[in-house]
Length: 291
Ligand code: AMP
Ligand code: ZN
Ligand code: FE
Ligand code: FE
Image (cartoon, rainbow, N blue to C red; front, side, top):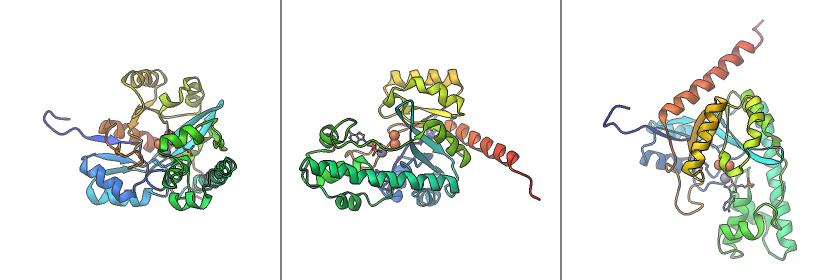
């Protein structure tokens, strides 16, 4: 950046209504434009459906777009979220696996609602599905449906009373291992980045993920303090991991949108793009020669 010029910033962790965000891609991009972001990435949970529309909206206003997803995985009983950047959104293996996770999510909604009903909380699964209106519904949709039906006063109350881990309506969901998620992202041509490590407090699983070829770690996140960010910057250096960051904005789900409140300099996007291109080169080199 030359002195006096506006810093070029990127928010690399964003959700839309294709998972548990509230915005359509066009709303998200309008906000990114208003904030003058140079680049954004879409990282909806267990889906890539919003990428095409987001890419189109970004192209129309000159914002650089990285397609992505946030896969739910686990390692040694820790829930780990893996961001996949630059993936081929038409990759058959990725789409097959994602479809399976979406079925698991839908079955889990029915199970959570059944548990609520057993506690005489009269929520209908259909109300959750109608509100979610996506293939990757999750606990935030159940929480919103509870609030809309007047059965809880707030999203936080819904999580605290019913939906948090080990609360009465919490249902564990099948997850692939974090190392499998890293392979899946690589097969689809993307770079694999551990999301919000400070939220999971699962540093002990990082070496296995590095061993599996993980590319980076999200040092900057809404829920990371400055000390937490510093800690993960040190780990990134120790393990030679790329550094990313983003707000994890879910639109208006919590009132004030977070987009642009956590960003990284555009130079970090260039490094990430370089890594994605390297993966593509290795893949091309490893592919059998045409007959
Ligand atoms: P799920 O993927 O269905 O297990 O839902 C996880 C999502 O729930 C996370 O990505 C968060 O966005 C959201 N979440 C977790 N805890 C809370 C909470 N206390 N209030 C609102 N949203 C939450
Ligand atoms: Zn979410
Ligand atoms: Fe997450
Ligand atoms: Fe997220």
